[in-house]
Structures are given as C-alpha cells and as structure tokens.
Image: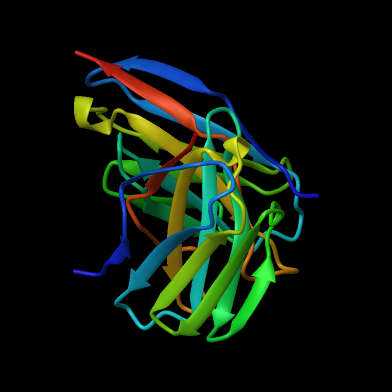
Length: 112
Length: 113
C-alpha cells in the first residue's frame, strides 16, 4: 500500500530556517499536505500543494514538491519557539478520495 | 469559527466495556473521519463516512464500528474494549471534494484498564 516517510526529529535555533522532509510512494497522489500538531491538540492544516505544482509559498512557509523523486519538503523561515510542534506530511491518492496516508510526524524543537 | 468537537478529552474505561466516542462538526461537511494516533505509528484511519448512513473501512477497522445517523455527528464504537485500544482518537471532517481531511477535533485520550 501507500507509504509516507519522515524523519522523526529536527532541532533548530530560533531565527534559523527549518526544513522538514517527506517521501511518499503513491505516484497517483493528487494533493500533498502539511499539518501541525501542538501538544494536547488535534492537527491543524498548515498548507497543501497540488501534485501538478512544484512550489507553493505562504508567508514563512515554502513547500517544495519533486514529483519525479516523490519528495516533499516544508521550509519554515525565521523559525520561532511557537513553531515547536509535530509536523505531519500526508498525501491523498487518486484512487480513493477519502483516504489520505499520513507520515509518522516530525517533532520540531526550536531552541532559543 | 469552524469547529469539530469531540465529546470527551479524557476517558477511562474497563476491558470488555462498550465505549462510545462522539464527534460533531458545524461546517455541513459531507466527509467525517476517525483516526487513532500512537507514538511511532503516526495517524491510522479507522473508518470514514462520506454521507449520512454511509461508511467505509479504513486501515485498522477491527474491533471498531461507526454510526452516522445525522450529517453533523459521527460516532466511533468500541464493541468490547481491550487494552490495545488505549490510544489518542482524533475525529476530522471535510467537504466531499478538496482537502481530506481538513479540520480536526482536539482528540480523546482513551485509556482501557
């Protein structure tokens, strides 16, 4: 079946850029998403990209998609302590519209 | 502000009990989802529903059932709770087309003793 993989941990200093990487296996993916989960809360949709796009920028967030390599990244510019959270990559395949596959999440720690 | 509301943040039940987790959304979304979240395993889809009285199995439906009698409400039922169902349960919703899922509730942390 489909698989989405992310590294589990990332630590950066406040003010640096963070880059969270994700790889997926489903070549028919239509949407790819990034969600943020703060402690004790559900997931919050951060941003998404259509599979026919290479890049999307939204304020401090930049999403890059390399469809050939099935690689997705989320860059957070000027990372703040409030960005500390778990970040989930997810992909929605073309075959079953209701089922998105999530990665295990990357825990981002921002040190002052 | 759009909302997905789960009825309990924390719940403690005993092995063998029948457990109901309730979720309500106020956005008139067609699709609703139940996930469980476990450390190191990410989010796994239990069931989703794309319309009233309609449901589809996710990746780990065993030991669970669901009910969608009204559009805004999606219930997850543990028929006979077991300790391996101790987990964080997340409900989510979205429109029929587009981002799936779009909005999440804050989760129910369920402990089965």
